[in-house]
Length: 192
Image 1: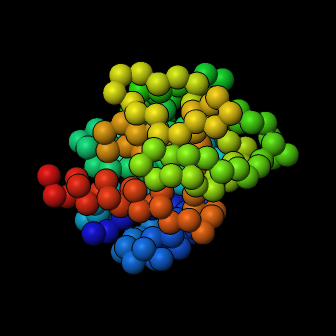
Image 2: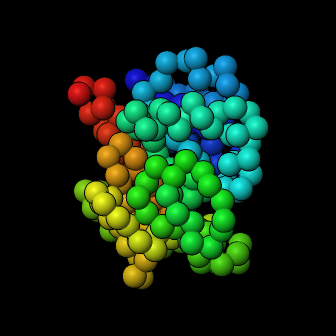
């Protein structure tokens, strides 16, 4: 198994460290030629969604990655990655992958000073530490989107098919369970 990590901006190094701890082979996706590497799933890290969105387009990564998601390749988006996967962004007029049937609100908890740590229940995982940095939250889900976690009345983790998204940064904790959950999704995809 090999996981790609979109490494144009944001917390991609931290995701790599989590995968190292799980002994999962991974590589960084920085330019179009990196997509020639065979991989079984990929991570869209947290960071600045407008910057990541612009760079994946400028580097000609957007269309190939969108096609991979639409074909069912597993993807895990954290924070900005959630925004990139969302079908609708309620407080921004931008268009990214739009592959998850949900509405997200950017910077929903405020700017940098609104960052915080918490603990929340995640369906199938249990009580988990959550780090929120200028985080979004999910305002609405549609269709077959499964809500995995809510915190203080706001949805902060969801899954739709082979897409997993969190408003928080599991890569900034010591807890490997969210990444392990994604790896289990990838293993199931590979075995189907």
